[in-house]
Amino acid sequence: MTPAVFTSPAVVALVVGEVLFWVLIASGLAARYLLRRRRLGAVLLASTVLVDLGILATAVIDIRAGGAATFAHGLAAIYIGFSVAFGPVIVRWADVRAAHRWAGGPAPVPVPRSGPERARHEWDRFARWVVAALICAAVLGLVHLLAGPGADLAALSPWFGRLGLVTVIWFLTGPARFLATTPARM
Image (cartoon, rainbow, N blue to C red):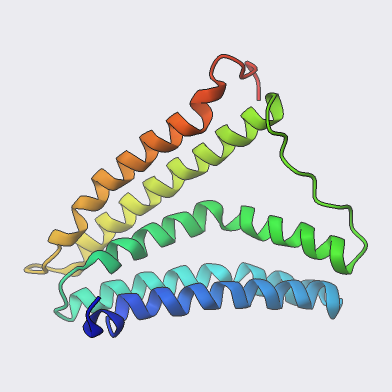
């Protein structure tokens, strides 16, 4: 990577956004369980959505200011899709562990390695990925709309194929293994 990559607004937004995402989760859980301020904890956890908006705004502003779209701009779109689709799962995962450690909550229950529960888990995660991919595609489309005429967006087009490839691989390595054993109603 060239030094210019590290000063790209999209890269800076991604790095700062990821750090801020985990800082907000940690501070939200600390407020909830260590300080016993449930409402403050909920606000901090919910504010992780603002990180996504900041990353999106930075990417659009960078391109509208004349910057060419780069791999980092596509990565920003996938980050936003993943964060929206999987963010609540990540927060619940962390919350269960924090409650167990600091508030006497029940121990986290591992996902079984097989059976109907595992099948439901695989289908849920795959469905979340599909949502993430759709959000990413929508964000890429939104960047195209907001970038303005003459913007260099060539680096964003390959992301649609990447989304399709990841979707196929995820399906084949996840829920497809359970097609024959998945109950009719999940």
